[in-house]
Image 1: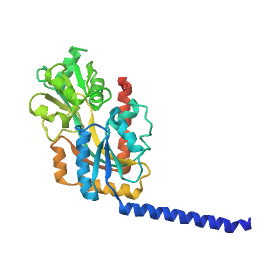
Image 2: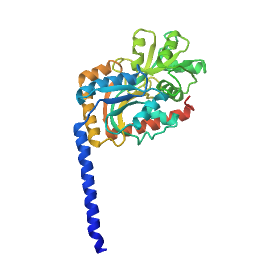
Image 3: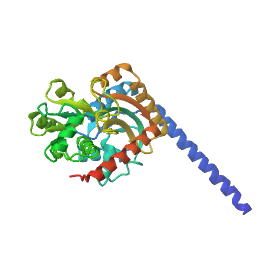
Image 4: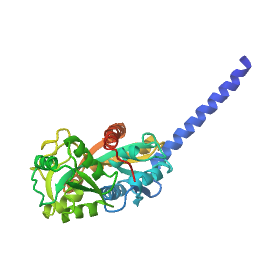
Amino acid sequence: MIACKPLLRASFAALLTASSAASYTGLASAQNYPTKPVRLIVPFPPGGSNDIVGRLMAEELSQRLGKQVVVDNRGGAGGVLGSEIAANSEPDGHTLLIISVAYAFNPALYQLRFDPDKAFAPIAMIGTGPNALTVNPKLPANSVKELIALAKAKPGQLNYASAGVGTFQHLGSELLRIMAGINIVHIPFKGGGPAMADVIAGNTQICIGSLIQVIPHIDSKRLKLLGIGGASRAKVYPNVPTIAEAGVPGYDASNWWGILAPAKTPPAIVKRLQTEVSGILARPDLQKKLEGQGAETVNRAGAEFGKFIRTETAKWTRVVKEAGIKAE
């Protein structure tokens, strides 16, 4: 036993040396970060709210990090494809992922090849934007209560359009259907644009989509806004009540956006990114820019953001199961 002590001491010393070297390497890499352009994966096609927010953050982060942040659109399977690519990327801070509320309900819709609760390090939440309950202007309903009454008087006769099965529009509409106790029929389309166009044309009657996307059609009177789907009224339409205020207590369906990094990204790099994003979100001009599009900044970083994602996942998993939604 005594003869083994020098060997144990040597092994312990070697372990300390290796640990110190690893810590120094991690610190050095964080100090030099970024050493090349940063890829910001947007797991949806160009033109949607994720892309709008992603490009805004890429532009701002490029200036603050001193290296170009390049948006990489990787759409497919409701955001799953791009998320998987990011999860399998090198955890060195040079690949980041923009996520939205879709990240919270995808585990209930798809067989994921990564663990969404362990595959990423949460950087920060960026902002949130409610959905908006809109109808064709010719529909004889001028409030949420009148729409619910009409739907109950004509069960199965009113249709709502969505961007497809398992999308934010679909789940937000199903949440309303469940909570209001009404029978409205889902008509899925391949994208939010075609869905809104069909409601505008009067073929379907209802569209519950992200406020960011429907503002132009509300302002042009091609869609009639009945209620805001978030927990509070939208600053762009302060006189329009929330759906919860107007007849469906507790209803809250808001889109949100945030940034993740692959798990095992050095903590110092994660902290640097959190600091930079926080600085961006604190700027009044950026806040005003988002408000003009029906969204607002929310500075929720690290563990707090991770807790928020888990809460949202539990909420939307219940909606998916209760509505019997299955991915196509």
